[in-house]
Amino acid sequence: MDKEEQALDQLKDLQQDTTKTAEDMLRDTIVARLRRIAEAQDDIKSKLGKKIGDLLGKDLAGLTPFLKGMLEEAAADQLQNGQLSEDLHEEINRFFEDTGRVEENFGTVAKEMEEKKPVEQLEGNAKLIAGNTTYRAMQGTAALKKLFNQWADLLDDKKDEDGGGGGGGGGGGGEPNEDAIKRVIELLRIRKAQMDLQTATDELAKLEGRKDPVEFGDIAAELAFQQFELERDLKLERDQRGDGKFLSFAQSDMAESRNYLDKTPLAEIGQQQMEATAEHLEKAVLALEQAFEKAADAADLAETPEQESAAQLARKLAGESADHLRKLISKARNTAGERGNVSDLLLDLGDLDYRIQRAQEEIKEIEKEINSDNCDPQAEEDLAEAKKALAQALKDKNAKQKALTEAIRAALKAAVELGKEAAEAKEKRVPAVEKAANDGQTDAAEEIEDLKTALAEAAKRAQQAAESLKKHEQLAADEKPAILPPTGKPTASAQKAVILKIEREIKELMQSASGQGESGEQPPMDPETLKLLMEMMRMLQEQGLMPESSSSQSQSQGSSSSQSQGNGQGNSPGQSNAGGTTNRTNPIEGDGFNRNDPSRETPQASGAGGRVPSEYQDKIQAYLRALRARQNRDK
Image 1: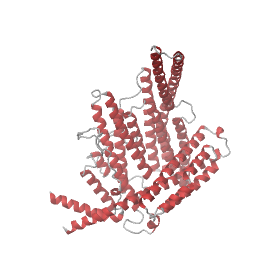
Image 2: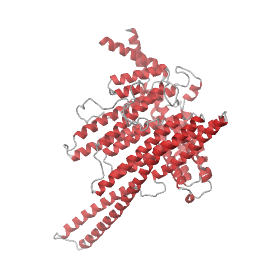
Image 3: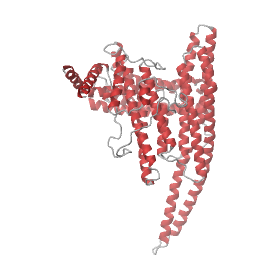
Image 4: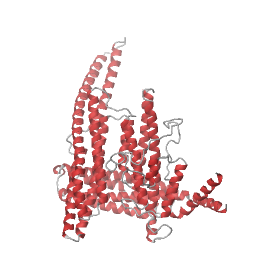
């Protein structure tokens, strides 16, 4: 009994430290985001540096479509970094005002950000990039990288502490472990919320044709907003702790689910799927660039002429394949402007529909006035003007409709070609790169696997884009609304894919934590941290915070359950039922759509309680032991 009381006393101490723990976690997040902006500067400088010979001294109009696209993309990235910097400045100010903490120099950083105006610097750098003032732009990115790292160093009180290798966690290995724990818990939370959304969508599907169409549409729109909130949460997680292996693919599936629930026109969905194709091709290019660098290093360190020759060949093939995929990215994004912009044309048609409606209403009002006893003499002229405006709007709509038809046809052709070329690259180019990399002992196995996954996903997205665009064409030709039912099979498939990809990410994290992962980017967790994480996951499940699922259990805990079910695992992440399914067996009670539940948003599991610093591990473990002892005694 004394041990239990001692454990509970320790828990009280833990609770008293919760506020400071939460503040520490927010501090760590801010430091990581500052460093990410610094890393982004390095990435932009590297991209520009690789093409410096083609860019220097060239007029913007004389650049190739690929180089123009690269500059536009880099400038857009820099503007995004400016927005991230602005958000960070606000958070640093708010944190300093709320906590008054001075030990990590929050006040100093807030003041320096106010004086040095990083947002304006980043926006100015974006203009230099967009205008092909390349050398000055590269100088600017180097200065910005130094600035953001300097601010991160000022806030990072662990930088010096870790150097001494002190205190309870194995010298410098604690921070990756904490990140892995926080990521797993956050992914479990998102997974549960996604499963709840999937169940609500299934319940709504049962009411199709039986519920008032307006109310049915309102519920679907609300579910679409819930999906958007989960998209936002996953994006925040990726921003804070990196993309992982499968999270960018899960993000694409979330967007797909939201679009269907929101009854987005199929052509717009097709356009977004083309953008997703480009994003996955970019991941493939990144993998090739990393393989390229490793091949170059292997060539320098080669012990035999044969090994050097193979490494040089791997380097050459990786570079050529990356250049080929960049052309596909330009085609997916229509960088050269060879086809009309489907999204813009859809917006224009929406505006024209509004103009037509307004003109028709105005004509009715004027005609009503003309037929009344107190008719204004000017009414006849107004009626003529209104009819003229209506005729022009109808003419403009007809022209835009033709332009949209042509743009969809061109996008459909491009999507079909992209699907074939991405699949062909995976089947023909990748094996050649892989063989040369293996012969040259380049240690690029992970990059090759990432390349295969990204190309398979790109091919799949391109195929989906082609299907969406073709369906839009067919429905438009039949003069039907070019949308799909919000609760149809595509919505269900997208939602299942989200869950399965999150589960694969959790599995990858757990394998890495136990030293079995493929990537090896982070050191394995120490046994105590891993044991603690397993215990936390078990408790989450017992408390109903993590739904029962053979799939998640086997994947999260790295069990050896069969992975052979389903098709396409490894080629199309998350598109199979390998290792189990995520189908829910428990019926929804009460409000099946969570509309009246004030706590319908699954609470953040990665707040103060999600952080597991090494100095608290023994206290948490003592509490868990005491809790189990009490549960056993109560039985």
